[in-house]
Length: 407
Image: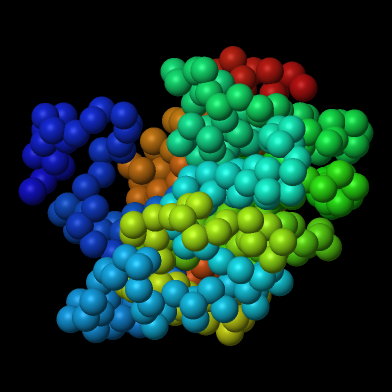
């Protein structure tokens, strides 16, 4: 199948709810994806943060081959040898007490919202139903998770959404102190807003959320689906801020390309789910959990620290680029979750990157987002930065360039 055939079949048979790039992936190795005619692309998207070990990792391939001859699915009616060991590793990395496995980030956000409300109800606090989220947030696309997502373009086609959700300004400690009260079941935040332009929470803000939840009995939910599991150079982004959340949804790299999400919880919240209260058919299946063990063992073995070192190098290179390139407003993010905020729509830079052998994407319209595999090398980073140094000026609209030259 070539690209044109793939595009024709897509148009004929699939929902048209994705705007796919004109790229047919045929293979990959490390941080490189392969396409038709021997073309290659350096991958700074990694499946939107999923392919943390890159493509074609030898150990991952070996696990898949071995598992293919075994049981791929058992349901959660029975035990298998991999879910509990994967959960134990997540507990060690996070400092939390229990783990619920599902299939995706959206699902575990949904589980967190249900759990916060269930605990309040079981404690006789039936009025405690409100969930507070923040401007710039993205928590998923099911009705509950979407109700906690602030961006209007995601919400508008499906309204009315679930009642009881309210949005506060991000990084506003005063707003938190006055908003969290006896009706608040949970406060949900991202320490780095992946879809919201890579804005980072201040430690004082995160601590203000923790203090308000402690004062009122609300659950603090730290959504670590994109910023967690090593992406910022720590096992979890909240660990930079010296807080321990009550509930932590994770997903993205956990299953190394297979669907797997997890909700991590402190014991008092986890206990609010009794048998039959919540469940999933596929969540925590043997194959996905085997891959999670491999990934988590690498995190425990120092992979997050490697991400921190590589991310610091990448950040330094981007800061130098920003200082010398008109049109770049600032560098955002942490670890290998980085972005360049531009003074114009980042789409043309993304398109040019695809043409010249680099995969990047944009978020919040004007921010170039970089989520490379954790195994990315400094030479690969250098190649991207050199490309950006030429591409950003070439893609800057004339009217923006004129404004910058007068500034």
